[in-house]
Image (cartoon, rainbow, N blue to C red; front, side, top):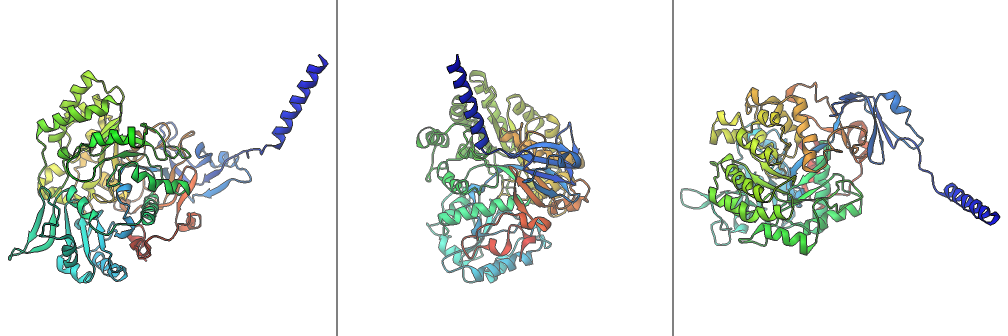
Length: 602
């Protein structure tokens, strides 16, 4: 008995000593924000003035006084100075990993005059070394310029007289100077031979330098210009993410591109190793192959089961919740059924039986293996046969909660919205109409444009729904330009692009970029709202989204963006809190001179 008591005393003493020696976790909050106007996105507590963060999650939302009671010696304090705070923006369809040459490109997003845009080309041409190109690759629209027109080839050639130059408009057309035409072999066998490519010619039959086509043409051209080094690709990710953080974006779903899994993920791994992944980045994977006809679904199954086995939902960066999770296949699952959304051309209708056969033969493989998928379908004419075949699959192999979605779906009808909802799918819209509506009107008419997409019907349907950018080529990566269009109904040209009965309230529009996007991350229980237990992602805005005039919404940006409880971007009075970035690569990068948006231009 005495021996037993002695052993117990020794054990208790040992445990007490161990506890005394172990470092005690500091009580209180890691971060407290006070004096704010917080729009929480949480219906049970829609407004607050303060929040507190601990271990990357929000653990208090309420009054300043109650938040201050959680202050500890090591707590970081932020005074919002009565600024508006919103949940971090989620862009559920973007292509960061398709733009690993981001630092090689001039961005015209937000440039207000064509005169300034052309001047930027001229300035960059003087900095670009021999052997490199001067490039503008998407994100802009001629309708954003005061001049309301495209640049002329003469203007562009004068701006860039001695370097190859390409100015690409969405995935619709490109302007090439003489040096670029020679390098790409325009008019020769060297130039990509793809369906529906138009090479504009002058009266003598010579190429002018304007080429038109669909997505595959422009992906091919991008592979023919000088490629970024591995270090430049990583630097491009750092700076493209910084541009997103600047607008309050804290989470994205990357929708694939030229670099497939697992190759693209090796670039992300460099950021995760150095703790520089300043955005949550779930991804879906697109397997294009090495050229020529391929079965993309078979390549996807091969990649995730044999090349580098990975399961849906597996996080390659587990130190960050939803850091770099595999979220399935897409957005292109078959080249022959890809209905490129070029609003300068008529609707591209896929032969219905070809679409049904593709779903029955290939999409079925994903359903059987429980691999989530997302499919680019822009036009209702193609959505109908897709749903016909998916409903048949569901009869024999129930989808039963498998997450899938339509991407873009610009002209989907109420009937097909209901069918998607019944099958448990979601719809990821995009904001291309905000920048390209004027082109859509010329092709399809104003009456159709005013109901494209059917925002009011989609929101009222209750279907899982998000608004996205589809950046960096097809549209602008600035969510506020897109939110402005949803609320005001006006495109970047100032013309009416949405009917009054098809516009959204400010709260509804913001929800599509917060809670809406969370569904596509499988994170709706912890992303998209400022609420206790949710991940600590939020943005302090430079002006009050809920009270500024409509024409100022497109100019909103963040002055402080917080992701996972840490500051990832700061401006104005918070500039000293912004994490310092390495110098952009290459040394002549346009990012060094023009920043991540026109108003940052030096």
